[in-house]
Image 1 (cartoon, rainbow, N blue to C red):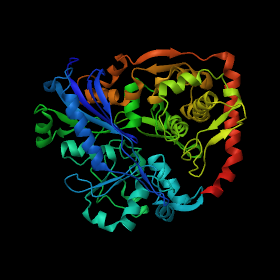
Image 2 (image 1 turned 45 degrees about the vertical axis):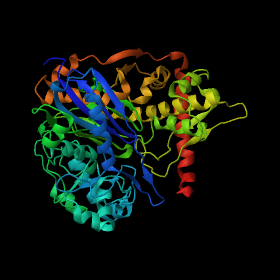
Image 3 (image 1 turned 90 degrees about the vertical axis):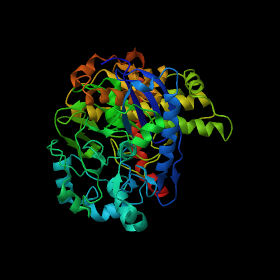
Image 4 (image 1 turned 90 degrees about the horizontal axis):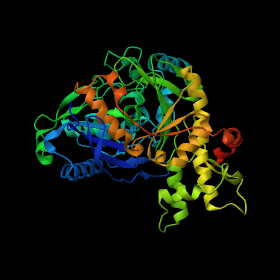
Length: 513
């Protein structure tokens, strides 16, 4: 392998795609970030235009391949990661037959409840037991996952379904647009909970689980091994982009897995935290396990014989973007750098202001889609710096709440913690995480595009350029933040206050839904 070998990397976030050219040893040469709108309605819809994703990705790829730093002849592979628990209906050629239903779309909730419902936390006891035993989790009764989305389309969008050959996750849809191959992996289909994860070598859906919710394999893409090559780039697309004839497309990754690769957290118990639109805490583990009470599970992992911890907090760094929009009031927005600089002028504890970051409900460590966020302890003396800092501290406190259960789930102390995502660009936020979680925090290189780096590193394994074990040799950390014990007690109280706020508000918030 030489550093000149290149990967065309795509990371499809909820806010839109990032596209980059990355060397197979993880150096990002150039990248673009594009934005797409999400369309909501009062019925619980949350949709995006999958054709728009493709148009933006092709445009960005063409511009990046024209960059003086890029030699087209060295592009060996296309690798894709991004959002999951979403569904794109496509025809036999991979063209969308309708909009993507994103992970926030809950219109299928009544169909999921009809298929799964019962007295045990909203589930049929027998069905929940079967799902947990085989998969480690279960489809959500909220409908905000592929089971609910597919059931919704089958029941309420028959015209779309009649034109649909495959129901695909967004990353698998994009891989098909590049390669022409309809395929998925245990990892990309993890949010459907329809594979028997006790055996990661079968590469088959579980017919009994599908039948239990009224589905079949008819419109589900075939399963292939993780870190495998799907095939060459389609001839017409290869010609359009000017790629070499031997450029291939590898099987896609969820952003959870790409973040592990990109942060260097690939060894067992090596832990990363994503501070992106959403937030999660994850590390590779050796076996399947589930914490039903706190929505934590071990799911198909970075290889075909290992697992990775999955959990999700619905609002991470998105909280700061939300506040940015509120403060702008329709006018010019403060920059991210200006906001975090201003936040540093407020003392630890934000002069008593507490922010609860449940703007889109929550999944882990409590599953409550009706929960809502807000500020507490505002006063006449509260200023903008306090509010910005309170948002940053509230997101960290929410992660610390989850971290207690993740560490218990892993069965050992987890440290250091590698921070990825746009929020991790802020030294202040990294320090707040170190102080709040009481752990050494590593800020990874170019944290906002860690998943782009991760796809390239994973692709280097798929192409045989390095072994999985050799990923440890790739440097990722650029700065280390140690916890400040002088504020540790203060931040521990903030975590407890946030938990108390949840207990106070979980009932009162229901009347607004």
